[in-house]
Length: 134
Image 1 (tube, rainbow, N blue to C red):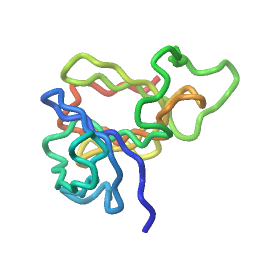
Image 2: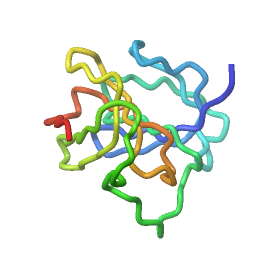
Image 3: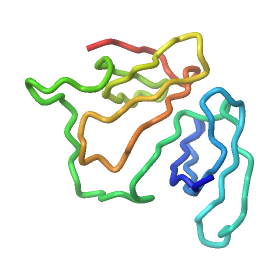
């Protein structure tokens, strides 16, 4: 199985970067091969219940000077339903989803901006205070 580049954000604020080969949305844990200095090649178990979200990314650090589009382009219909997610820490993400169900452990969001560093985001339901369709 191919290695997938991800950034993992925990509810306590920790951020880890690395590769996974066994992430599945219906599993309670997966493995992360860390890229951080001093930890290269270290593999850890990541438990979904401790997370805020899993970001599937193009690049581990993105472009900090890029201002990502937050609004949908007029006349463009995204794949799935437009959605806004508010996390318990106050962060708000907008995008589209095809699989939101509040009774599942999480759901995928696809970013508004096609030039975003994020390809998709797996949002952990317990880290969310509000979900709103746009």
